[in-house]
Length: 446
Image 1 (tube, one colour):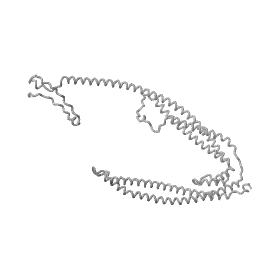
Image 2 (cartoon, rainbow, N blue to C red; image 1 turned 135 degrees about the vertical axis):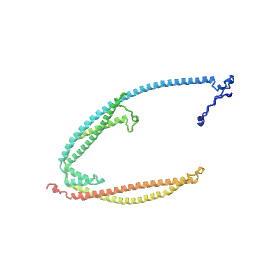
Image 3 (spheres, rainbow, N blue to C red; image 1 turned 90 degrees about the horizontal axis):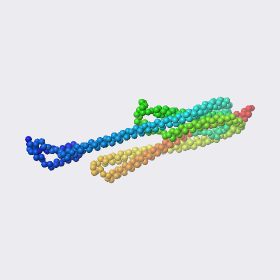
Image 4 (cartoon, helix red, strand yellow; image 1 turned 60 degrees about the vertical axis):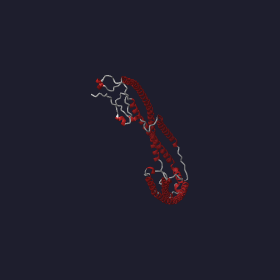
């Protein structure tokens, strides 16, 4: 056996060195003189820790174990307090939610009852108006037929188109002529129209209230079912997305205002129905006036002549304006073609400038500098972009102007057709028929 003293090899962590972690310094060996035990125990001697290091090591372990135990105890106490507080807060929040659901159910029930009352009232009002409408229709059937000529003129003039369907002087004179004989009929027609309109409004209000009542019925069912849930309910499920705020959700103020507005609208329709029913009491008083039908006929003839002159003048002005618009459309189309060609002509310079900038961006290293050619090319590109933007804007404006001109052209042509059609009705139909108007002796019954 060799008599050399065996020394422990220092620990070397190759992974720490590879990762750049500084290695631990090897323990400094104490300069302890070798024991004088003789050469007989030389083979059993090795580098060991000193007693002080041994005591320090196990005291450190004890201290670490104690610290871990104290930390565990602290965490256990905090965990217990936390889940106890969470349990109490959850119970309190759930109880508050159940209470609020109960109050909400009472509020919905109150609104449902009020809605139901107004629905029944609107239904009764609509039924009474339907009975009144039947009476008015029977009264209209019992009225005399208007004079044939005046009625034919009015029917012919209803076939006028678009803006020419106006209540002009001719219309007023013809209505006066009919009202001399059938004033009661006109009054009954207006009243019947008001009743029909009111029936429609009542039905719309009733439908709105029914939809609101139906929504509240469903909401009441959902809230009632939800309020019966408890922690022991077997049919509860996880719905994580239901806690997120939904879009198009109203607040309590708008919810209440919506129903109040519906009820207010229903009350207005109920008042309008009562007012309409009461107004029929004064309709028994009807005027029975007599006018000189021949004088009225002359007034109608003069109104027809004046109306024909106005139509001819308006038609002439529209035709002149149409000619001008057609010329302007041609000029605008040529302008659009020119602007499009200008935009097309800028495409080649734009490609050249962009290609030059792209090639110069490939310059290596220090050659990629912002020199004068670079500034010039960038300025050229900005100028081309600005020019193209200006040309495209001008093209858009020109196309918009052309579209407006086309709309004006179509409006003019449509109005000219209306004027031509109206002139045919006024002069070719109505005035020709009025030549057959009975003479004074015939009107007198002779």
